[in-house]
Amino acid sequence: MIIEPRMRGFICLTAHPDGCAQNIKNQIDYVKSKGKIEGAKRVLVIGASTGFGLASRITSAFGCDAATIGVFFEKAPAPGKTATPGWYNSAAFEKEAHQVGLYAKSINGDAFSDEIKQQTLDLINADLGQIDLVIYSLASPVRLHPKTGVLHRSVLKPIGQTFTNKTVDFHTGNVTQVSIEPANQDDIDNTVVVMGGEDWAMWMDALAEANLLAEGATTLAYSYIGPSVTEAVYRKGTIGRAKDDLEATAFKITEKLSALNGKAYVSVNKALVTQASSAIPVIPLYISLLYKIMKAEGIHEGCIEQIQRLYSDRLYQGNEIPTDEQGRIRIDDWEMREDVQSQIAALWVESTTENLTAIGDLAGYKQDFLNLFGFGFDGVDYLKDSDEMVLIPSIKD
Image 1: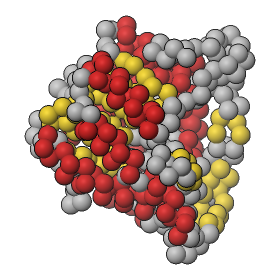
Image 2: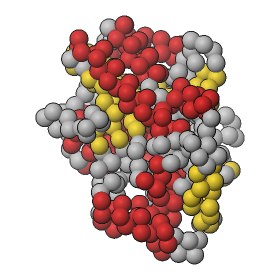
Image 3: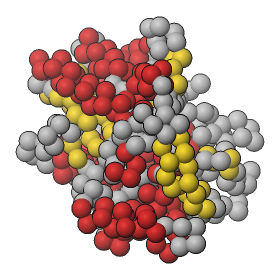
């Protein structure tokens, strides 16, 4: 079938298998171009199909020569209907890994569930024995709690007062004012349950109890802080409370891993275009300005550049891992440079529908958004028939 992007609001309803495969190849080529990393050899990535989780799996495999198990929740293709991009990403990753003799298997299902946790434990036990590195990179708006059976939904809201600021519809380029009503306590609590650290801790407890963590095992979760212009709706809002919980959980996990000389970290990463960030008011406008400045300074990074630098310059650089006062790895250091942020603050005030294409990088934002779904890549013929029925080699059903 001929596959074209079909948009509905802040999501694309289609994905291109050949474009997703090209995306994977591009990321692999980048990692290989940076040289080998002396890092983990047996890696579990929870949330492995898109974004930072996918980049972590690629870097682990093609940077460290690691065997990888990826856990994700994606929709398989059906005749005449494409899969989600994460499905095609994972299929392409496994194919590329197998071609060079790397172990790579995947599990598709709800990572919050006890069933998927047990399936993962069984696979590790059967194939790898133990794990050196656990990446926790789940991004879900809902969580069915495995112990209570309650379905929790996260919300993106400020706390304490209504938030009003600029935002942009990246499809049209229209800069407008947006207002978001404040959260109540239930909103906060539910968001923490979905996006906080409880599930990360459950995964680590399950792995430890099954004796599947190697001596010195490391685990890493991803977070974001961002600038003052976004903090009311992000870091000081409901999501921020969840991130606070995630970061506090790292210390609790480290305490439990002490018998193995293991450690848990939270890495604070850069703002990037994702399906989730595109739906957050203010963020698309901020990213458009950020991209323009960072590209001009020669310090722009996408997911794969961020994670490759995280591995090579932080996790596996041979010395003690550098952290901030809260024990977090800061790979958002280039984004948060004072000169970068001061330029954004000045541009933010003057940004309008009329001038955003000149002072911001809306075209780059749109390109990155299309890339998420496998569209807009050089070397892909989008006018030819594509086979939507691509399967993931290690997933039989």
